[in-house]
Image (cartoon, rainbow, N blue to C red; front, side, top):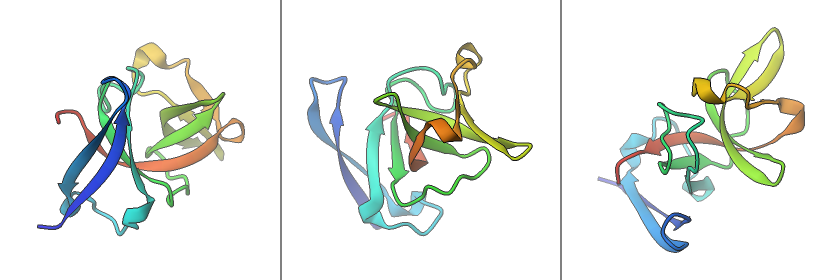
Length: 123
């Protein structure tokens, strides 16, 4: 079994450097491993799909927007995890959790950093 190991900083554990190891078979698309990175999620706006403190694996090389896929965005000096919604030729990024539906960002206001490929809630 081929495995992928990625380093990340755990902001919830005194910024310790950690490793995430997972089977390459979990990735359903052809990817460039050197474009992958791990981010620990801080917040509940994407629950129940992505939980608070979950780890997400994202691909820096995938920035083409696909409806209903999840992306990491850069907005107001922060990284945000949001779902792309394309409707009537307009693209916005929004939260999944109804309590955070007010967090909606127009594509013209954000920088798309990466497409989220995997989510790890238990690790």
